[in-house]
Amino acid sequence: MTNASEIDSRIAKCQKILDQDPNSQIFAALAEAVRRKGDLKKAFRVCQNGLKVHPSYGSAHVVMAKINLDRQLFDWAEIEACKAAECDGWTRATEVLLAEIHIYKGEFQQAIKLLKKLHQSDPASPHITKLLSIARQIPQRHAMMVGEAASVTTAQPASVAFGDHEGHDETVTVGRATMTDSHQADDSAAPDVDQILEWVIALPGVDGALFTNHEGLVVKSQWAMRMDRNVCGAVGCEISRKLDQTLMDSCFGKVHTVLIETGDRTIYTIRAHAGMFLFVANSKSNLGALRMKLDALLTRQGRN
Image (tube, rainbow, N blue to C red; front, side, top):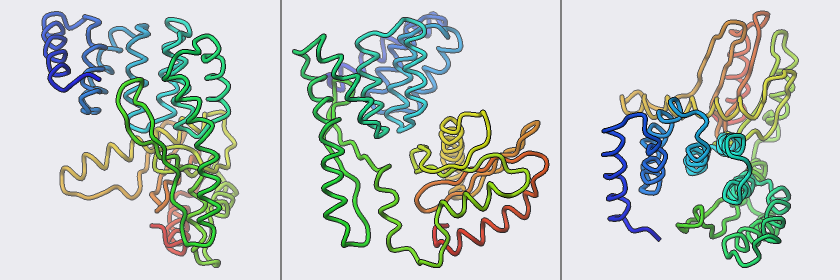
């Protein structure tokens, strides 16, 4: 494991090279070192700026995938891993990273399939063996915890020790599958997520409605567009998160709703207790009526 002094030394060396040559590909190594230090905001900025100059640098996309994974933006992490493969082809490191992303997203069967192939080609790798064990154990542990928690108000998400990209130990919380468990104590008269989405998608001019968890993963949706719902959910959560950081720094408080008007679409997000609703409407929609009705429904839900 790399210690803090070694990371600081690496950051200083990479930064010196980048200062001398702003077009250097050393930005990827700098972003990775900054990520390992834990400054994800700076790591993202460094890597993003470098990719503007070197968009086909596969290693930088790998670093960006790791940064997004650490930021719990799992869909964006997967997109960056695939971009790395487009640039340099699928490598062992990229496939291992993709398997990790699948685990974080709760896509255990996809992770197991990929890890089995990797294990066959490299059976001595302790990291691959550990990941394969995790991908198999988490669903089993979660099923046991859900069963044990069925008689209580809420169920806690399953956690398991996990390696940080063949380096640092941390704990992974797999919470997507437990989101509906926390709804058991809701008032039976209150509308649930499915009812809200069905009501909204039936309105004139509304083309898409979805609900994400706090990580930006789509949990439920009613979608009638070619636009990728998973990308929309991830982007909506990222915008809300960025605004939260900015406004809280300015003492305005956390963001409750966000309204984005584009050339032919209006995107409206509203925060709920267990995640976020996102709605996409066209010019035929009555946004004012939609917002008033949603506020009333979410107040009844008790999730504002």
